[in-house]
Amino acid sequence: MNYVISDLHGYPHEKLLALLDKAGFSDSDFLYILGDVVDRNGDGGVATLKWLLYQPNAQLILGNHEAMLLACSFVFDEIRDDFEETFTAEKLDSLQRYMADGGDVTLKTMQKLSRDEQQDILDYLRDCPLYETLVVDGKDFVLVHAGLGDFAPEKRMGDYSAEDLLWAWPELTDRYYDDVMTVFGHTPTLSFGDEYADKIIKTPTWCAIDMGAGFGREPVLLRLEDMAEFRLE
Image (cartoon, rainbow, N blue to C red; front, side, top):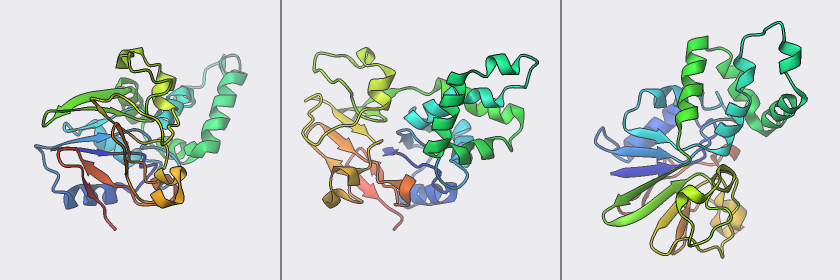
C-alpha cells in the first residue's frame, strides 16, 4: 500500500508513528511525505528527519521549508577567519526570513546535534526529489509539495522549475493533467474556504492534503489505493 501525508511542520514524531500504526502501515507499505516536515512547532521536525534517514520504505519529497533550511545551512559551517566576508547580506536576509517563517525551532534543535548528525540530515535533504511519479492499481499519480505552478498540459514534469513545484498556490478552478491525479500539500485546505477546514479536497485532476498541522490542526494520512483517510482524532 502507498500512503501520503504532508506539511507536518514539527508534528510530534510519536503521533506520526501512532497514525501510521492506526492505518496498519507495515514494512511492505510505502510512505511519501509531501514536504515541510520541518519548522514552526515542537522540535521543528528533527526527530522525524532522523527517522527518515533510516526508513527504507519512506521518502520525503522536498518542501519549500526544507529548501529554506538548506539555503540557511551555512549556519552549521565552522566559523572561519573570513567569516565576515562569507556571511553576506543575502545570507542574513535568507536567515531572517527563514526564522520568521518558523525555522527558529528547527535551527535550535539541529544545533544540539553532532556535526555528523547535522550533515547527515542536510545531505539527506539535498538528495530529496522535487516530485515522484507512480502508478497505483493502474492509476497514474504525481506527488509534489505545492502543486504545479505555471501549469500547461503539454509540459512534462521535468519542465517545471523548483519554484513551480515548491511555491505554487493553486486555485479551486485549476485543472491539471486529465489522465494523472496530482497530490500536493503546501496550501492548507482551510485557505480554500471555511467549508474545507480539516478536509482533503479532491477534484477530478488534483488532491490537496495539507490539513494545517503547522497551525495546530491534525494531519490526515491518505492511502492511494482506495483514497481512504486516516486520522488520530
